[in-house]
Image (spheres, rainbow, N blue to C red):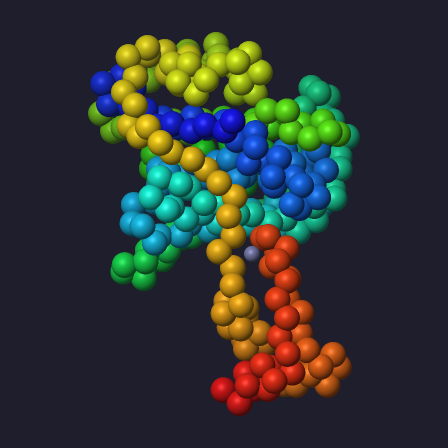
Length: 295
Ligand SMILES: [Zn+2]
């Protein structure tokens, strides 16, 4: 069972989210027919974006959209997160889901090779109350996802952050997936920072700790070096859920313009649209398309 919890460590000087996302990533793998390489890539992405839904979303209807493109073989990767009370609802898509690369020399999946590192990580936060958009753009560091998001938090948010993401996958599916996102508060002392650096360095990888049967609290204790954690929220979860509907695709089609819609009617009579996040298909009849032209 997936689990996610938020904690305060070292008397509130450190904020940490730890998530096991094995089921979430397995769902994403099946939905997008991913290879082991793209499972690791998109799995890391939905894990970190899902955790950001729980730490960065402050208003109920805020939306965070993350775009990564490193000019690698997978093309463009997008993930979107909303927060519904205590449930972080994440969705994602990838340009080319069938990319498969050989393992790197260290035996790890070549996520950076698949995404590429010649490009940007772009994070757009849409505030539902003020309608203000905040956008943060940082060049990719390695395309390995965790490093790129750490860079984003440091450069764009001025928040010292440690992020670890892991997906253990074989041909049969996802064995373990998870991650943590640790933020240092401005009042964190040098002593605490050193303690955390040492704790993280001496901890096994997130997937190893999950394989060893540690729960999220035990993992949080290990990577903060603090066994007096304060649990912030008891019931939290990260789920894959798409919020698409026909209305949203109406506006997509109308943005094509009159001429393009006329062409669709002449050539195919009707239009089929498939949601790239959940594969749901919508059909627009000739009558519906004509109505769009009239508008
Ligand atoms: Zn959808």
